[in-house]
Length: 332
Image: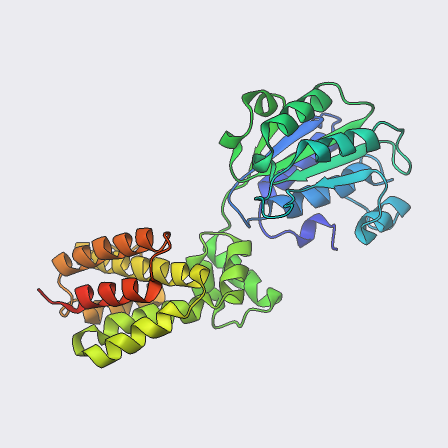
């Protein structure tokens, strides 16, 4: 794991602030990292934790050479504790009070390698109430020198008392061009990087997930449906519905999302706007406008929202899709 600040994409201002606080001896003992999923909060928290534990005390970043940095990179640092939501049986993931009690037991002793401890808690919005109240006591009265870094995409889900005891650090979205430049370094084909960057709302994690999940293929299929509407007969409709019904539920939900975004872009084109989700498909969508009047696009969006809601139930997916496709090819 690369622990150097330079390996983090974006967030330069936030990183400068954290480094300055540490150099000036003003680092708060509890911080709350807030921002959308996949934009680098956890990655930044790990580099910060490495810096706080580094033997080059007071340096601008982890040196990467001392015994502490070596242990951190190997995932064996005895004074670093990572707490994440867990799932037991069929229960939803959460941070449970048992995890907080185990943490409290482990941090009761003196640090072993560094002069302090660091506790990184990711997904803290998933703490249950008992765990949150127990954590609050530890933050208020830590047993020795330690830092807490709490990471969340939903700060409003935390107890007010926890939020009030942490310095809040906001993480903004990554600029689209910067994200597009970075994606090839993560194995994304260069020709797909700009498209993924435009669809991911400034989130590196989301862009990588879109690629891994075949998001561009799903988008292409949704765009293909719009092009085929004027020529679609019942035989092609049945085949379409069957193929879509064979997708996993998650992928079908993504397909519906892309279709919704494409229809939204068509409405933007009707209004003369330029802020499209799918800027690379602007020409294709513009050529469809004569075939799909604005009123029909609104009607299709309403039908799509109804389909998305019904897909959350246990209804027959193929029948739902057949009904949806029959309604959207009806020009009336």
